[in-house]
Length: 118
Image 1 (cartoon, one colour):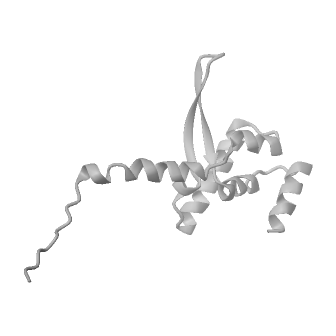
Image 2 (cartoon, rainbow, N blue to C red; image 1 turned 90 degrees about the vertical axis):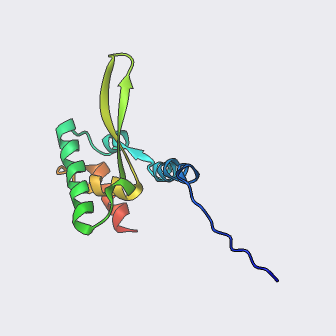
Image 3 (cartoon, rainbow, N blue to C red; image 1 turned 30 degrees about the vertical axis):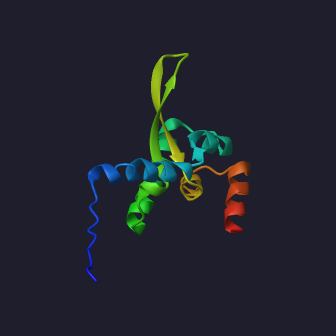
C-alpha cells in the first residue's frame, strides 16, 4: 500500500483573522471605564491619570500584561467637537485604580469593604 504524506501549509491569510479575534476577546472583558470610577469618587482628571498610571505600574512590577486589563480609547464629543481619552478596564484593573485614590469617602469605603470581602 502506497502512503502519501500530507504537509499542512499555513499562509499569512489563513492566520490573519486571529489578531482581530484576539483583540475582540480582550476588549470584551473590559467592562468598566473612567466614568464608572467617577461614580465612586469626585476626582480631578490629573488625579485620575495618576491613579491609572500607578495601576499600570503595578501590572508592570508584577509581570502582568497591562493590555489584558487596560485599553486607552479616544472619544469624540460632538457637542464640543473635541476628542478626549478614556480608559476601558477589566474588573481587576478597575479595582486597582480605585485603590489608588488618595481621598477616602463613603462610596470608596464601601467599595474597599466589598473588595476585602472577595
